[in-house]
Length: 182
Ligand SMILES: Cc1cc2nc3c(=O)[nH]c(=O)nc-3n(C[C@H](O)[C@H](O)[C@H](O)COP(=O)(O)O)c2cc1C
Image (cartoon, rainbow, N blue to C red):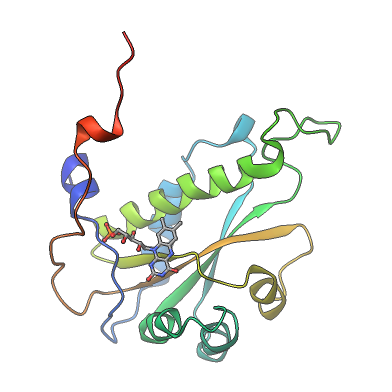
């Protein structure tokens, strides 16, 4: 798939069919996600894919700050990706001090790149996705029994799209988002 088709064609998908995503397809997505850039190549991002229905339901019901719109999306999804990054890696020096005034926020930056890469790689395989930020990160970490050093950045609900994507929400013009300073 051409990069332009991929970037422009990906839409947030919130309604999915019952078709299951194969582990082979998930691994093929991970194979591409290995190549994302990260702070000093620390590669601290992980994708924890919840296939277990009970755990997915627990996250849907109890870990989205009572935002029922997200509950419904997760319930419809075939699987749910918990995107994490490791504490104290991105944005940090080897001695544990922060490198820039932005402190530990670079972890979220790495996770953002990883999330978009995941969604584009999934789209190329015909798999729909939506990034979910209205979540209770602490509760998700607990429900998934994640190790102490993992910080939950976002969820990504995934599955095969129920319907063909409509045109995306309106976007600003290119000249509005870019300033060329000569
Ligand atoms: C950081 C982030 C958080 C988001 N959180 C949610 C969310 O909690 N629930 C949801 O339905 N969509 C969420 N979205 C999806 C956006 O609403 C969506 O990307 C935007 O409306 C543009 O539509 P498009 O993805 O189809 O181009 C989030 C997207 C991003 C990047």
